[in-house]
Length: 514
Image (tube, rainbow, N blue to C red; front, side, top):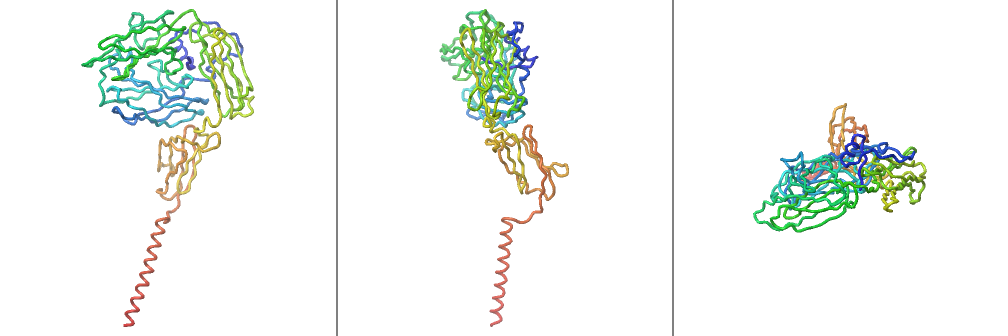
């Protein structure tokens, strides 16, 4: 279970939502720092759109645009996650839209500070997606569950949305009635502030809408996740039950193994797909294991003043069990060169410890590792991250532009190599005397030649922009001279002229002899 660190205002909202007050006693360790010294939530921003406004089952939905890391630090192993929802026009304020699917659109994205990446990907429009108006909501998180922008467990917090339509398939004759949710016998809404239930079993029920003329049995799957359902390692339990034809209500019971937040996912896949998601909390006297919020470094390549850090907090209103927190710095041979350890019962405040990176002999190739060990359960949480120039092989650190009849554009990475998978070029503008004569936008290329031979002769300037990098080059287009096919044409005309002259001379000689 992991959550993301927040700004001060966002932290207050988060603690309200998960029921974790900040009144518990602080760990008395001089090395504890605020996590917010190192990170602010919400600074990786997607700017995305679909290529069409309407799809049919069997189509490929296409998502294009950019993702920008507006942080001053690098992030690695980023996942672009999405919720696909059928629009609810009647009770959205209380229950949100009708969930249909959860999608992992892209993985293993690494960003240097300030970097922009181009996105061009597809997702299937499955035959069991019912007709209707749709919204796709985006989230950015790491494979370890560190939330960068948007929280998939909350209806109203996302990194952006796109609207489109699905037609030509099945009608939404079967779906969970999101207005009928009951927990322990009481009516609840999907978008309510997280509700806390006493320790012990939690009983959930929801009605099914089945408008088919001929009813058949339906298979209902239910999964319970600890804290966040976007990370499969958080799965606590699951069941699959055949729901008898014509039965209106589905019921299940879940006994939380420990205090904390949980997410219930109800799912039917055939004949049409429909989901229902509800998040709740279980309270009790037991302590909860320390939760890792983030692990990272302040910059790459690392400078003299850069640091490694790990953020953490108690995910319940109780202090954590006595826990050892260890942050290690390892060289490129994975040998520990520096380490910091603290031990304590931690509160709900999001704190951090950090290490300077100046003990590294090679600041371009190293590892960091965080290890949390509970002295009560012996349970370990361990996360390692490797930083080297190959981690950012697709990230430009410099742009190169040259002109020789055509404009050559390339980019190099931290290894000094050409970017292998393509650099996102936001814009190319060619100007003459301050006036734009040619411009291109949204190009993804590692090396591209832009033909400029059609420009009239004269002096020009070109500006190329990619993320935080901008390069300008002055160049001159010379007078056009025939080349290639033009030279051949002139040669052929010359030969024909000579042959014509020889033929005329020969003909005149014959006339004279007669």
